[in-house]
Image (tube, rainbow, N blue to C red; front, top):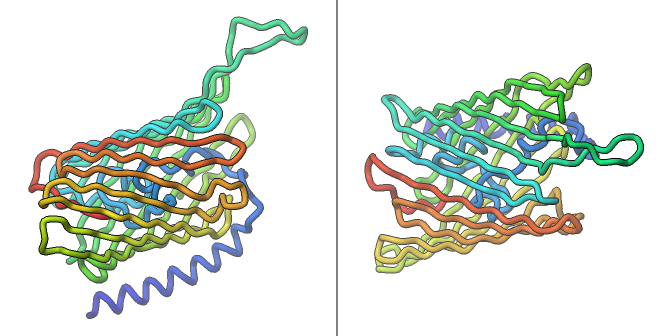
Length: 325
């Protein structure tokens, strides 16, 4: 009871912080921050759920809320690839390992832009090409503070290259995750990209700082039968330096057959992109307990379509439950 009262106080304080941040990060400042690739949703599952990630779990939580690392019971490896707009690509690797006292995580994000030909002032193509790339290396740690309460921290090193110019920055993430009602209601909060500026030559840009607050509510049907059905509702609210305050929503419908393999259909919506016709997302998932395969599709209006795929492998530790978060 005391823990719940503390959480209510923290939730009220966070809501006040969001309202203040929303006024500070006025909408209309889209694209003013550096390292914009950090805003791209890394995992296919979270992306299919409208990019909700406040209560994410496992190795991929490094990219959303590091508190979710504590849900790893042994070892977990995850790889994701995104076929992004205009022939660009975004790849992510994440590894989580249970250690004494908590869970360690290591992640890598790499944004790729195809080389562009260079031309001289007469229009003749040169042998050299323009090279653009962005990368972030993330180290995270999470531990269980109490029953159902996880705390996580992350440290990332960011580097960018624009032709012959390079820039780097250091940033941190912090998050908390709380199972208010076990196997039903889970809430999470994360502060992302708190760090130094990314500086090219004499121009320095702040990182896309974000506050994320969200939750999941799980409805479980036919729990005592051979075919269990779970329906989960997800919702996040974000206050970002570039986009102001916006919301994300997701719906996950999962069927677990004989306690072995779970199949999921997902859908979601992100309010920031709705005006461009790119707020919706759909996805599929398969969870065998040992490995997970996830896919997400989202239209980007005139910019085209985005396909995401993720593969996760679990090993060591106790058998992982078929979690619907």
